[in-house]
Image (cartoon, rainbow, N blue to C red; front, side, top):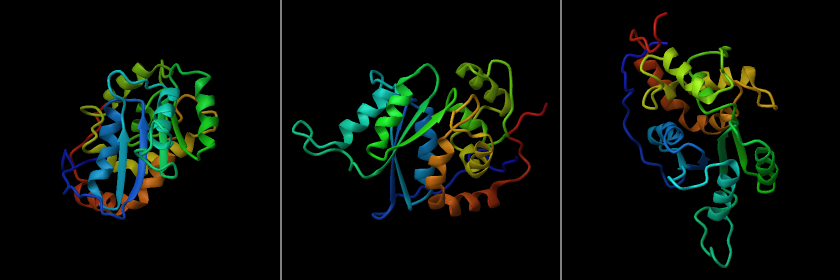
Length: 221
């Protein structure tokens, strides 16, 4: 896949009053936020509110779930919650080392109709699918190996300023290998992407049409 403009510059658009609101609670402090913010900035039809953890926050699945509770459930101590409990809410986390608490969060989230987007073992699995189909490699159960692998496959590493443009490809590639057991190399983030893609599809398709050219973003072997 080749890009004419390395930064895929676009005119930033502020969301309208009627823009679709999706609230995303993510485990990572920067990469996930930068990625999802890309889509918020290109279209006035969508507002993706990304709640990334601060330095001392509990970023485990249970910690993220409790943060959603504190932001949505009205109580004496919290008379004016930040969000409405009926807003579209996604909890995005890695499989990594979290074990049984993942199943607990999944079950508890069903009570509120909140959505889960789990990647195994890490968010980089989802980023990988923007440019490639499933590929096995040694040590792929290790999150750090995924990060190294991704940086080797993509010239300059994955950029949240240009590579999110291939989100439709990522959806297609992730769906091909997805299974409910979330085995290694599987990710549910495509479900979240399917939720917001209709609101940004016109901008994405226009950018692809105008910017794809002869500048390779993939390292030559």
